Length: 311
Image: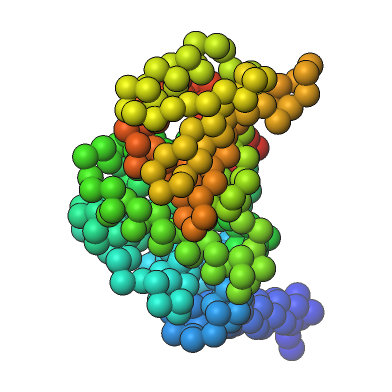
């Protein structure tokens, strides 16, 4: 005759095996769900499905206590694959390539026109859904993207430090080509997916106000611009209230002005051109004397970006 104690042990063992089987199956089902989303990310021709798959795969908890997958793409890899697919679907991806460097686990990418320069995404420490895109050899977060909340922000000072300072000597046509690709990708996200985009120093819309970090400018900063303009056969015209305007080639006009109040100055610059193709960063690439003026006074003239995200 089987005792109640023995019978209870047999029942417990059966339950344990059943629970174990359910846990294994649950882990496998999660893996199948991950695989399906990743297939969509890499193969779909539908933009909205692409975005949904990338959002689903970001912060995806693939492993469980009973089933682990040793080889996985990171959240950073997901952003990079999404970005590459976005460019491909928009017919913008001819200069952009994903490459997996030997002995490096995370995916890297290149702009072929920039040679060996590699780039990657890095997860924000403030927001698990946010990622920074930048070169691997420099700490330059060129832009921030949050696919879930549909946000993209360019980082003015990092863009200038990388494309104007770090890549000094590279043909400006090549640099503008890469920058144009980034702005076209951002415009695609804005127009087709409803993203909120801050173009910052890459905003070419006439009347865009590029706010300087200092708020107020010292007289010596404006005096230096007067001198450098004259040395390069351009005339800086004062507006009578401390600001000034500079007419450059092809009708491009740069205005440095105070958009603040008497007790709270807010100095910055505006760029106007008929084609609306020039922006603050392009000015620094096109006119060495403006670049020199900016870099000499960078603490005051740095263009403000979102301080919470990039600070």
